[in-house]
Image 1 (tube, one colour):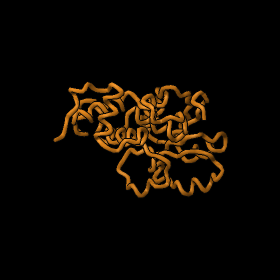
Image 2 (cartoon, helix red, strand yellow):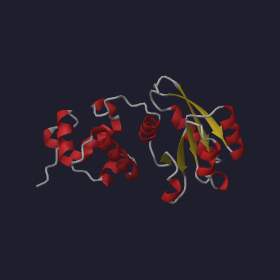
Image 3 (spheres, helix red, strand yellow):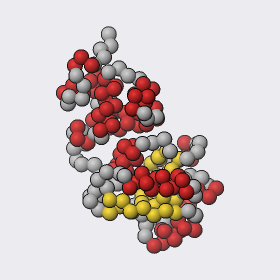
Image 4 (cartoon, helix red, strand yellow):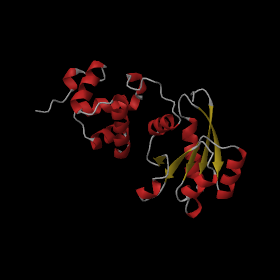
Length: 202
């Protein structure tokens, strides 16, 4: 899929505040033209699926009591659609296995953007290139090679520890670098840090 195409995304959530908040965040996703559909009931979701199947559906696993994703998928076997769990409450991870991805209330715009890009297969062919990293990911690499812990990075960048971990996982996947030493070399070569900022473990 090309990023210039119009992307249809449905948000199924009964809470107005959460639903409109996610819709607002989706409108701020850079480089993607997104049209959102707000769904407030299972009946409304059925109508949405009958009229125009979205490319991505964000749905609260506790939507109107409980959202049976397995039955939902069986009802629309031909729908080429990604389903993302919109996690607003504590949910057992085993109950999220059927979803293609998950997003939580604590995730930031960079995380939302990254997950959408992966779901919609919008990354370029050379994901190992520095340009594939978001500004936030470059900042986190800088913090990591300076010897900061996840908690310290979260406090400095005003994000959650969970978000830091998600970014670090994405960095590892994009760069295919699995060691602190490799990440340090990458950061120095790409001028993300100065040599005297690097913490050397002896």
